[in-house]
Image (cartoon, rainbow, N blue to C red):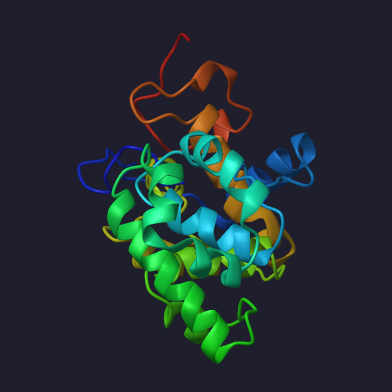
Length: 228
């Protein structure tokens, strides 16, 4: 989910996008893709949680490749605990930090069984009490599975928000706070995915595809590319 780029050292716009421009920004993205979805594959709330935990500092494509076989056999916390760390490791060994992630997944699965009747909880506080689950992961679960208008800031969202001038900040938390205040409420439900997909396929880190961008005229980034 995060991709391979860090939050630091990303070029930003000095200008700030006006509210009217931000509203038009999302109107256009909505027109192109009214119901954007996560690109992580999952079958229920639990497998989504596992996939998002695995996606930290990894690509969605890489996670999907690793979980394709795993989720055919493991779809509940009970099954995961029975599998254990040693059993889980071969499935996820192609993913970065797989040892730490595997340990967290087994631990959070046991906690779900012990404290939440093997169900994924639906609040920030309860989700973030689980090993390996930070604010961003909690926001993804709440948005994707529970339909809440949360804003998970990964490196794609962070880059697009800063580069366009929509929400400038030096930390994901700062950007999240500003985006929530800036994005019109009628677009908040899907804003997280619109920004991720825009950053992944158009507003790329090294060479944004500005000539093919539908919101190019609204973007405050001064160093737009002139060719693809």
